Image (tube, rainbow, N blue to C red):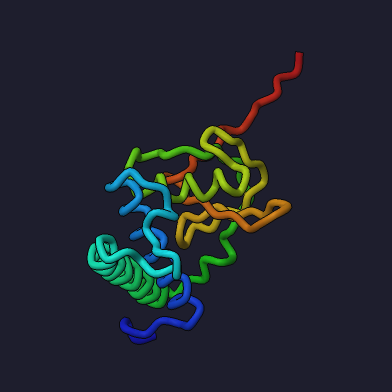
Length: 159
């Protein structure tokens, strides 16, 4: 894989995440709700558009670089990390305390998993540290060490 080439699916995810992260940064900076960023036609208000463009470009480039680097690394190792997926139990939290994780925590809350929620039997993927599961209304993902921690195994002692 050429380091500058990404699949259509990866491109779509990068665009979606970059847009949401840029919006979330504006929401945090200006202390407004998302609807305030747009006019009645659904376009960004001029005051937010220029800043959104800069933030979007930054996030887009960072995410694209991450995917390209990960692809090259996987090719060089010659391993198939998909076979290393495993089940685990997690707790939703902002592990690092970084403000950019608040966006993902907010989205998980909207899906019914607020911070502090314990989620059992998620699928952990070591290739990107993602923990994935499905709820009644949607598919969810959290990142181990960023937006969730693994719950310790419960040990049952015989008495």
